[in-house]
Length: 197
Ligand SMILES: [Zn+2]
Ligand SMILES: [Zn+2]
Image (tube, rainbow, N blue to C red; front, side, top):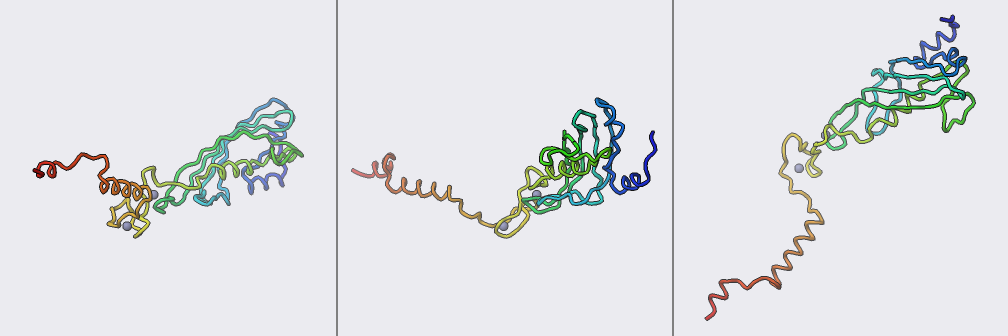
């Protein structure tokens, strides 16, 4: 293994997702696989977040290509959030598959940055987490949520609130009511027919 400059070594400690790729860049076609697990900050969307103390796991395959380094990776992290329906804490694991090209002086819209012999995988890991975090997590598919009237958790016990009239049902009752009154196509009541002399 080549000797590592002190400064680079110190920077790697502070940025665990930063890796030396000088050997790869000098040998097009060469592949290296690596695993890194480290916490990352600022992984949050409106409904969920990866807690700061929770490690994010990266399993990556780095391939030296003509343009730079092609990164194919799986990113995993535990997240916590709040159930959209009942507001109880909920959690899960995100698993994101990514395939990104890292180039020097490339188009920042479509590629990630390569700094000479140093590749910082953190932006890739960060973006993969943000894209995979659920915006509206549920504690379970069958969560019944809170009663909009009294706020009771309907997963624990049914409340006695009368459900707000649903416009669709209201329309239906008007329809049946109208039919009963007019008596249009219905058969004559048997009692009346029998009673008439
Ligand atoms: Zn819920
Ligand atoms: Zn209620």
